[in-house]
Each structure stands twice: as structure tokens, then as C-alpha cells.
Picture 1 (cartoon, rainbow, N blue to C red):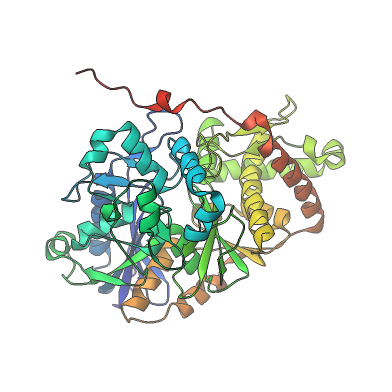
Picture 2 (picture 1 turned 90 degrees about the vertical axis):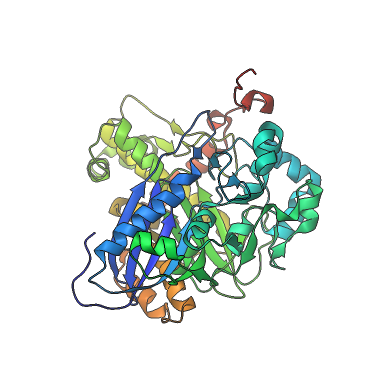
Amino acid sequence: MRASTKGRRPLVAAIDVGTTGARAVAYELDGTAVAEERHPYRIATPRPGWAEQDARDWSDGALIALARLSAHVSEAGPIQAIGLTGQCPTVVPVNGRAEPVGPGLLYRDNRAAEQAARMRATVGDAEFHRRTGHVPEAFHIGPKVLWLREHEPEIFDQARCYLQPRDVVLHRLTGLLATDETHANATVFYDLVRRSWDTELLATFGLGSGLFPAALPSWHVAAGLAADVAAAVSLPAGIPVVVGAADSQCAAYGAGLVGPGVTSEMAGASSCLNSIVTAPLADIRITHYSYLVPDCYCTELGVNTTGAALDWAVRCLGYASHAELAADAERHVRAAANSPSARADPAEAAPLFLPYLGDGERDDASLRGALVGLSERHDRRALAFAIIEGVALAVAAVVEVLAGAGSPATELRVGGGGSRLPLAGQLKADVLGLPVRHLDVDPAGLGAAMLAARSAGLGSADDAIAAVLARAQRYLPALEATRRERARLARFILARAGGAVHHELAPAEDLSPAREQK
């Protein structure tokens, strides 16, 4: 995106250390995106259920993107603050110089399922949830650390601290070793209500209290941009760098969530579903985070492969783009509307697609993807529809869980790459029976930037977020379509619970990497 030339105005930048790459975005204080730069990096999957990255790519990618952004906006206006966000929970062990001593283990890495189970058995699901707002899964940081201790003792012994991607970039930009409360929440060692590291929990699992950095409030101005980094990216030294929050929490803030009622979906390679509560919910299925608004908590559930499932469909079904995939799916919808058999039994129109392609989900490491009810009657158009619908159904199933736990939605707000397909928005509105808004900006970047503006004293985020909501595309449910999709959702949930889409994990001893004999 080229920089705007409509005059020099104060700008604020967001750096997002994402799953597929780092990006830097510059915004005016009214929320207008002025320029954006991305630098991709790769995910390695050396074994089924594993997902790794080179942590050096996070900071290198962030600096490359920031330098390019700085060059593009040099005539548009001065960058006066930087807000940070990123994928979470992803973790890398580092030494005393904050250098990686092993690979970064992504949130979707499920190798630590056994360790998570032992943590739950030791403390109890309900007690873990009461203290941390989470119940340990392979998704979380804590089980990954325990896996490293058991399976990679050389790496564990070298590690002096465990950092998440945003933390790595914060250290690179400022020299400060710190995290924020939302990233701390995802370790399952942080007391949600007391807002402090739970030293008793750490000791229970034989871990020292110094293994994680100090946890700051998300709105804290961590430090100024270091002089050497400032010179490298052509920005003034000392620009305030705001610690920020996990990407989903920034996305909720950027989508305008300031109180109960609205649910947001950060729809990228994965989807995070968030809502605001004034007190933690008792339902242990619901994870909780500290929030960017004081005295509130942010719930979270998610699906690991939503955008990634669409990418897979484009690649494997032979489409040139997501737009072509969606166009064929739309053709299927029109054909099914004129088909007597499809009208008589909507289940016959297309198979059900379960988009669990990441070798496990955050709440079930054994869950796998599936096409259910596939027939030779179904052509490529039917499959294209099934893929997009399956993502919508997976999201709707999560929203239903939130509602059942005590956080019902009045509206779903979607941002990120998943907001670019109108059919997806309409299907979500139909299956939920609720209005759905597709935002035209990425809410994680907007949230991080507006939080930085607020924290650096540059202005309020309210007007910027209101402008984004005013221009969002709105989808309303259609009664007949809601009946059809609710029936499809019921079948989807049954299929998800069925053994046919679950995979028996190999014993832990079989998952350790092969070692060179010395």
C-alpha cells in the first residue's frame, strides 16, 4: 500500500508479529490506514501435530516491515508512537542474551498434549480455571515448557527465559525484556484476578519464577525506540513503544468491544472469538484474558485453521484465488436453490466440511478435518461451498459455546482476511441468526495502533473505531436460510463429536525428535 499524499498528519504505527509474517501498518489518528508493509516467514511442520518457526524471523521480519513502512510514510506524516501485537500463545526459549536456543513452538503445535493432561490431573480443571482463567491444553505455553524439559533437556537447560513473538520484537526495538498481561495469561501460570505470576503454580511444576519476564498492563509505554534500531529504520530515537497485547485482544479492541454484547472474530489463518465480561465465567471451556479496558475480562475460544482451510481449498481444488473459490460456491448456492432434491433435503446439496486441518485443535489435540456425506453427486462447486460453509459452521459452533456459558452475542464483527468473502459473512449471519459486520481494516493492527495512540497521549480511540464500524459491510440473516443452516449446524456438531474425525495420538515417547548418535 502506497502512502497517502493528503498532507502531513501525526501517525501511529502497529507492528503485528503474525503466524505467516510480520507486518507494520501506519494509521492516522482517525483510524485511516495510510500504508502497510508485510514480510513473510515460514512455518515448519517436522512431524504431524508440530508447528515451528525460527524466532529470529519474528524480529527480522518486524524490522524489515517497519523500515519499509517508514520509507513509505516519510511524506505523509511523522510516526509518533508504535503499538505491538502478535500471535499468541507461541513461545521460544532464549538464553541470557535473549537469543533463541531452540525453535519457536506455535499455538497450533500439539506435541504437549500429555504434559497438559498431567497438569490438569495435578491441579484440577476447575482450580486451574479459577486461578488462571484457562485449563491447560497443548495450545498453552506451560505444557510446551514442560515438554521441552522432558524431551529437549539440553534446550531447557540453556533457557533463561521464555518469550512470545511480540516479546521478542519488544526486546529488539527497545532492549526491554518484558511481556504484557494478555500474553502472561496464555502461559497458564498467571493469576487472572490478582494480575501477578502464580509462584505456587510454578513451584508445583518445578519451574522457577524467573522463567517468564515481568508482565505489564497492555497500555503501558514500555520504553522508547532504541537509537540503533531508530537509525536502521529511519525513525527518530525515543518514539514511545507501547507493549500492547495478544493479537486477538487487540482485534477485539479494534472491533469496538468495550462491554458485553458483541462478539468479535479475528479471522486470519486461524480464528479467535472474543467477548467482554465484567467477571470471569464459571464454564471451564471458556478461556479468559486481561483486557485493554480496565476492570474487564476478555473471553476467548477459537478454531485453528479457518483461513488456512480456505488456502488449502484454493490449492487442492485448483482455484487461482479465494475469489474464484467463492464465485464457484455462489454458483452452487444458485443451482441448489433451483434443485428440487436440494430443497427437499438440504443435506444432499453439499457435504459437511470440518475445517480442522492443523492436526488437532486447541481444545482437542486428536480432532481432524473431514468431509462428511461426500457423494459422487457432489462436484467441485459443491466442495467449494462446503469449505466456506464449514468455516462458518465451525465459527458458529464456538459462538454457541460462548452463549451457553453466559456470554451471548447480539452481533458478530469480523476482521482480517476472513472478512473479504461476502458469502462467508452471509452464511455466518444465517447460521447464527444475528447481524454480522465485515470490517474493512484488520482490527488487530487498528487496536494495537489506537491503544498506542491512547497510551502515548495522542488521542482517544473512540472516534476511529466508530468510523470503522460505520462503514463496515453488514449482513442480516434470512429466515429460510437460517432454518437450513441451523439444521446443518446440528449435523456439524454431531460430526465433530464423532470418532470418525478423531485421531489416536502416538505415545509421547514416539514423538521425541530423532537424535544423532554421539
